[in-house]
Image (tube, rainbow, N blue to C red; front, side, top):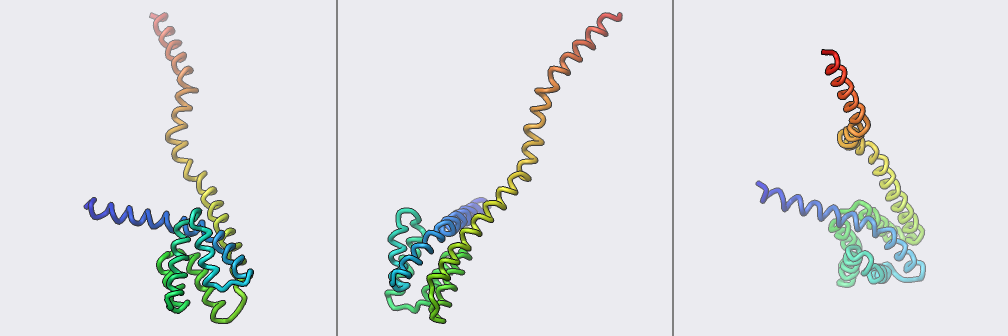
Length: 177
């Protein structure tokens, strides 16, 4: 039973950590992508330059963008390649980015402002998630404080008083007979 459940649990935890690293790397990658696009590069070369620049800091996203560039260069359609990127990563923010890139390609709109807005949105979303987790921390600490720290505080504060009370009661009971 454990041999069946442990690998799945380990894989799910590794996948969750990878998605979190991709989510964390996305705003920086979007900024680099915007810089390349506004400098006059095409989306393909901007993806490759972004991949090269992120190689040391965010290797997971760098590998994904590099693979996307190589697939485009191999002759696959941009829609298929970006769809596979979203499917491989499984990250909703990457899926939103691929939809944004596909819409810009389909309708011929400027991608720079749209990607910049998306980068700002991902930063705001990340900040909101961090604030939400911070608010949950207080609630999660109630039980450890109540069951672990509170008894120790009671023991330290009431312990000497109980000892003195017992000594006093012992002396009173010892003197009466």
